[in-house]
Image (cartoon, rainbow over all chains, first blue to last red; front, side, top):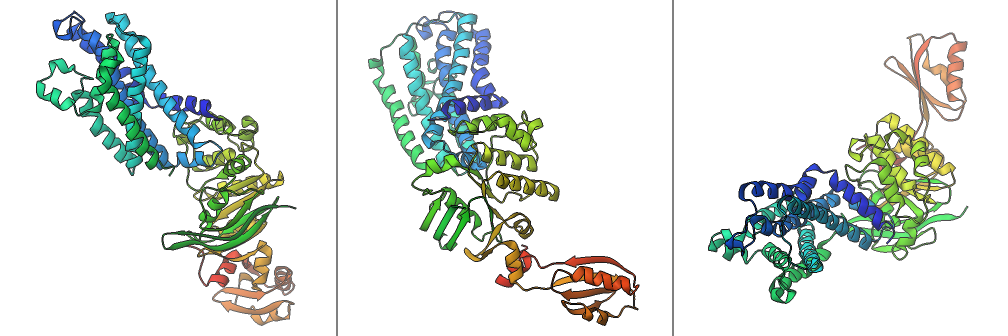
Length: 247
Length: 304
């Protein structure tokens, strides 16, 4: 596993050198939070069970960051590294393929965490948002949701013949998901028809699991969300491993 | 001298296309061995089978005593590879690239020293996308040398470089050999193979059609040297027949061409002209080259 840390660190540096990726991963969600916070504030409302709009937005926006990195950043990065010959060059070194995958996943995971951390910090400092759950449980749900969406991202990269197609597919999937899953706008304020559609969207399950654990639910109350996300992780991961290619 | 690479009866097809069709050769330690031929002749497929990046259909390959397919990890640790088609992340900086690739190897050389040697010291903070073609190529050479390899593979190293950068790269390759390393390179420039390689394998349609030192390959052709110059009407071309080695002489418009063999052809012609007090200008000599060897062996021009 020689080179894993060095590669992870460099991949993160390179990620931060891409202004668009950096903006959407790290600054977009806190910016949305400040914007909507300025409009709605964080007064307790019966609609959200006595919680404020910001209280429920922070855990939901975590899903926004996960979808951005997993469905857009990761497929573009993976497919273009393959297309331009970057992966080919790695293959000519003693770097183990597994070591490459581990540091790739790790670097995207750490970037996602950085975005989530800044989001939570903004929520806490500006709106003094509530947290009623168990930190380890929420971390677990975050990791499950993130790895499930990374698996889908590698799947897109593996199936797409070019980086351009990977980008298109990723965006076409990501944007409707963000708006129909409750990640951007709470499902409670959306019409019932959209809520019906949301049941077919994987991001809905990630958002709901993180959000409900955030407000103190137990894992046992959400076996369905866990099953859907584990299914994405497993099926996506297997097909991704199958379709992965170095050139 | 030991054997660095041994290839026996190598075959590799892509669909119905036989890219490599029964190739055998050995590369000795400490030499620059070149594989030269037109695009699509099978050079890259051969070198990538030897590097272990492609799996041959048939044949045995031993590189530094290792089997590239079975002992891939051990092999990749002690060889250096420059690929024909490869890239680095556009925003990866030169120094970062060396640190990163160095971290993959159990043994590595000093990155700063390597950058000095390759003339990249001033570019250490520059991102890959801002480098010129020659600088990118030198960075790839640096990456191929970061683990202090015994054997270095260079695939189409100078393609796309201007003549000046190409010559500088040749010096670089010679300096790698002079440090006791073995170099296996491919090129489709005959001049490059002739000037740079200790031994050359000429490959065409997946088969090696000739393998020897450039001098021997050219000598085996038995081709004539030519001395060409301009002179006025008074000159009688018959006078050159008295010179040893001259086979014939003729006038082509205002140019005079003297054909012959042997070392003393040029000095003989010039000496004769001066003794006779005949003015001449624009004197050129044309030697047979590997280009002529390729033409003689395949019946085709090498240039594509």
